[in-house]
Image (tube, rainbow, N blue to C red; front, side, top):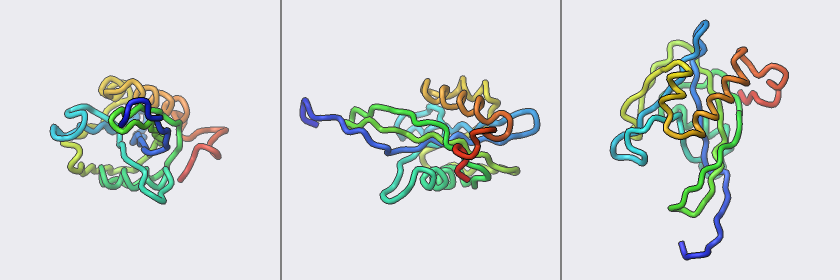
Length: 159
């Protein structure tokens, strides 16, 4: 990119935090990046690009299925997380979702990841590589710890 070129801002990606709401204890899915990918061996939530003609919530459901083999039981939009991708000269705004899945929740990782774990909230917070991931998970816990989004469920729940 030539020096002084403008930086584009796009809604380009999604992040999906996967929750198994077990009685009295949420379990959060963390995925470890494969050694041959970007951010090798770091731990993350489901992350992916929004494809042409796709809405963010459609991308969230698709990426969850592609990266983990899991199906969404309930899906909530949570926030938007900005990130500057200097290699592309783009500020990408990742739409953040919380996806609840039902038992059993067998995970099948794809090529981007080489391991997964279901962790308690505090353990997941400690494992995530980026501070924004911890911020998003804390927002999810604050909004949805009662099992739904309460009085704002009508604007937060997607599926």
